[in-house]
Image (cartoon, rainbow over all chains, first blue to last red; front, side):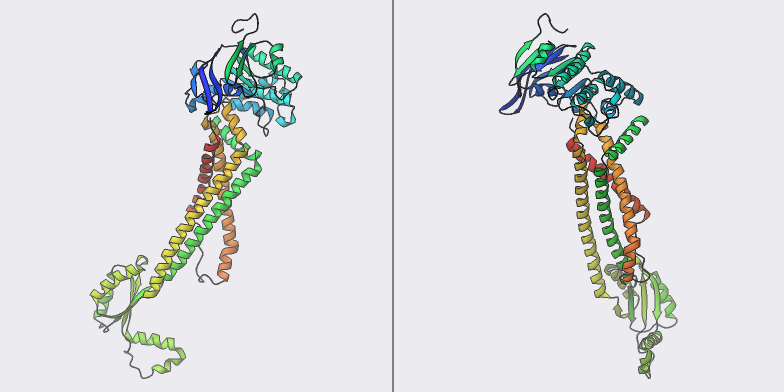
Length: 228
Length: 298
């Protein structure tokens, strides 16, 4: 599903975010991306949805070489990828429903289809009763669940999550992990950047560790080989 | 297709409703800018109009060396009427000239007692076609006139005409200069106001790009919004202009005897009014487009 060949990303002469990274993630895998702050986790994820372009190397996503993808093709790639951020990135002036519907409307989906799918997605994250609320009226955990609903409503092939529980307490984090696991069980490839080591212990999955942009560890939980 | 148009339109309207302050700031900026330009345009047009009225009174008076005989006169008038640039011809005989003089003197007409009635020279007064009421046009006419008849002297307000020509060309120059400056300032202000409104909504633009919206999908509602705001701004400026025109300007100008009694100030013609509103629409769309380029990066 995702392949990187000798990928480097350099912002300036002496600032290198990702350094000669090569790895392969199969369809349906659940992968933690870990490392200290500044290890290159965010840059790695950003390159996958082409918010950044690599300085060197090749990246393949869903069978498509996105290294030199033309900018008019980027939207179509992003429709296959759901992204979840630490700061949620919700539109505070829009209702919960509108925030989730936005992702489908952007793809030009018909109205009846939008309302049906949005309701399903919100039900999935347990917020179908908050349709008309504004995000700021909700708790951090609820806001993150809306963001997850927005990412999942389009049935993405890949779900990228950048420190999704960074601002949330332990209980909420577990709820959110549950949502990711369910998405993964339906076949979505999940990449979760985090430095919360408790998570991998509680939900053991493949762990990719970055340090100063380099791949320094790639471990699978005992007893598993390749994708589950 | 219809669904998409409806969606874009609804989103543009919803955006404006969600950001009433930004939206009214953009509309007001465009209304004030357009009204300023249109007011300036009206000032220039009216001064030109007023000036061109003065030229209506321009005529060429040719004093003749000798008065033509009664037989010569009709053919002479006929020939003069055929001249290029001549609108009408009036013959003033020495007697008629004396009569005019007498009238002007009024109570002092007694002074003329005993003066020979044919003392004054005969003359032709030529009214000019509008395009010939200029230094150049008059030169053309004089040239033709001199080949037709022996002329003693010519009067056509030479120095006045020269000054008038300078005035009109200066008016046009200043008009073009200040108008161009205003237009530039308007574009700059409108583009920046719209840029501010987009800056406030950069999160929305970012998220749209993130969830896979195409450039077209992101831009169209904003351009539509710019068009609607420009349209409303254009209408507002027109409203403001016509209200201030009918309530204040024309009355006060007339009261201050700045305009001749039978002179009606010109307002924008229907086509110009339409142009003003359309200019608002174009301004809104261009303003949005130029700012979007900065904020939308996929």
